[in-house]
Amino acid sequence: MIRIHQVLATLGYGDAIGHEVLGIQRVLRQAGYESEIFVDTADHRLESLTRDYHELIDVSHPDNLLVHHFSLGSKASRTAFALPDRMALVYHNITPPEYFVGVHRALARECFRGRRELRAYADRCDLALGDSEFNRQDLEALGFPRTAVLPVVPDFSHLDRAPNRFVADQFDDGWTNILFVGRVIANKKIDDLIRFFHAYYTGFNPRSRLLIVGSHGGFERYLVALNQLVATLGLSNVHFVGQVSDAELVGYYEVADLFLCASEHEGFCVPLVEAFYKEVPVLAYAATAVPATMDGAGVLYDDKNPRHVAALIDAIVSNAALEDQIIDAQLDAVGRLQAKDFGGTLLGFVDRILAAPRAPRPNVAFDFWQQFDDAQALEELRLYRPSIYKALPAGGGA
Image 1 (tube, one colour):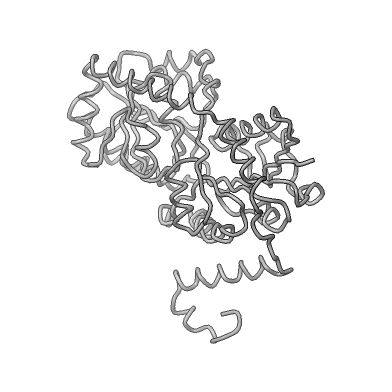
Image 2 (tube, one colour):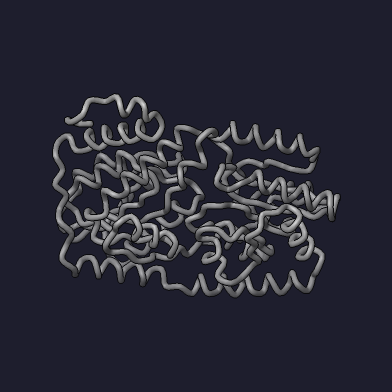
């Protein structure tokens, strides 16, 4: 009996990868496959749905298929690499490490290593799937010979609940609420959002506020810099809300007059289509996967001059007819997204993998990953401390 299991570094609560992992398991089980989720770590609210990645060894079989979600390298990923099972890799993108140098050096190192480690899977997996066309193209550029797109079809059920009334009572007061939802992380360019809001606040509408909803865990240094920017600009209406419950998130979407995004690197960006679904007009920077995610809806900009973006904000929120037109187009985009046959597409890829000649089994030496780690360490020396790298003896491991 063929079993199709999933493996990933961590299963997070409420994030895009977590939603997709649970959706894949649901489709596979409905199709009659035995399917478990193996992880290195999991949010405590989801631990009961997972198994420890060490147990993969006990259930491994050459006839099985592993659906391996890759966002950063992990012990779970490396265990999956060494097993004889077929593999479908689902790539969720890795943010370029240069965004995190100076604000989170450990994450910068992880992103650098993750992109380097990803290349090792080019010949290991039977099919590499990007969850967007942007991510598929990234895989192709990295040398993966067999690629396709497994579309993200967001689950909006968490947005159909009643809103938290405290949010409405606090912010539903006739002021213009500009909203961003996402991690407070450097590639999201929250600093640009603050500059855009400052230009709008001072040039168009002093009865406005900026609401930034999302976790800043691990990025406290970046958050301090953002608060310093807010103080330097003399703003009092920028609110760093932090991580919220589903009911609170619904409340923020319902009081929002505009969703503003300045992110420079996205593999998909689920909050954009959440805002579509909640009928909030979206104004977003046209970078990486964002234009494809918006699918012709919302409003894109490619000029980050604060006065330009502020004028766009004003043009949208001050024109009810234009706002209605934008929202209608966004709802049409949501309809096209929901009409995609995620389950049928996934099962079609499963059939394609199982029917095709399998990729060569990995030939993993006992010290393969130690050698890999050594090579990464030397590459980091070459990039960050070239004088030390040049002083290494010639030959051998160097």
